[in-house]
Length: 573
Image (cartoon, rainbow, N blue to C red; front, side, top):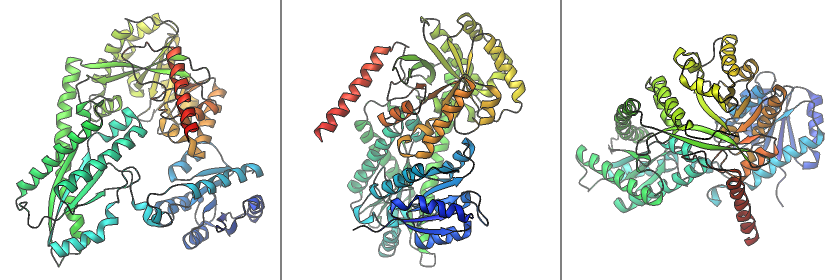
């Protein structure tokens, strides 16, 4: 028979403690209590409860502080944390989400809701698979990268110290996936997890083929880089140039292996930065320090390669802008309930054979290189050229622009605004707030000029960054685009579910529509639809198209086919 789950209730109000203790009685938990934040943290560290109910406003340490302290330490990071407060607005819930809280309860409590949410967390905690059956009940499971299945460096450190003493030297190869953020942004997190798993397999395969006794480790849990540690004594790797040769050879082999696994990706999207170094054993230096110094040397070689790559990309971006070599694509946006096409987001990428195959990378790099406005001008010009060739009837077109661009006089008289005015009701400006808007009143007047011309306004990335409640309240947008950070893993995270629901309710109060972006799974699709999101966008529905040609029938057929596949899979099991 399994042990009773342990629940810690931390609240400085004894009445609240008694009430919550009474509410959770059906869950058959061993209940511990604490009156302040310091006592709560001490009990949690000593008893390692399954779940902690933390009042946000407590003496000595706040619930925020206790949550952060628990989630930041490996030994206590697995403890489920539910924040309890009398305030339940979006800002507080976002804070809890960022600190790692698992759920949120708002006073006054509803008995059934308390039991349901705590019960769900306890159930999830006991059914979650952990890599390695023997590690499932140990803190070591936190030192394995789930995507690649590899141990992290701390897990192999003891063996590395033994190797260094036995062999007198160790070789290191450091492998970092190039453009990993752009791959995830373009293809989605589910694809990138598979890409990362395959990259780990390729690194292990190359390491074992080249160095039979090699140890391979992930740099970090959830990271995108790997280390190969090998016995270098007795090899011909005595000269620094020889290590450079090994690094280049490993890099080419990995690129070839990954291109074979992902033939549909552009060749320029698959790349690795690789650096190599050797550790010579020195008895007077602490062993751990020798290992980490060697890792740093290999990492420095990679960072040098990254700087060279950045200079190359800057030259390529300048050439793209000068020659206007951009590609305009159209990603369908679908009504959540009906499955009909609402419109398209207009996306800009580099040319098909360029390094900038992803919009986020293209514009993010342009901002860093101080070329954002030059690129924006070319992107708008090309988009306008494409839009002039289409029949716009019955569809909306969303274009993403940064807030500071709205104030540029060039943009305000740009021919695109005139074109939009001629086609009233078809266009929406997505406002991306990369820097804080200094004067909302002035900015609101700028937006009103566009609204007078029949152009609607959306706030991008609602639920993160600068896309704050203040901006939403001050600017009264027509659309709220819910950031994909909230959509990702929505089915498994109650706080995200509450935040999406609150944004849906807020949009209803100001007369705006909600649009969830970045949908990649059927679970995300169903949750967004059931939570009342109006519009949906993401790879689960459709990838960006060369032309806005996808229609209602195609989307609905795709959804129906997916549903049939899932039913067939369920029946087979």
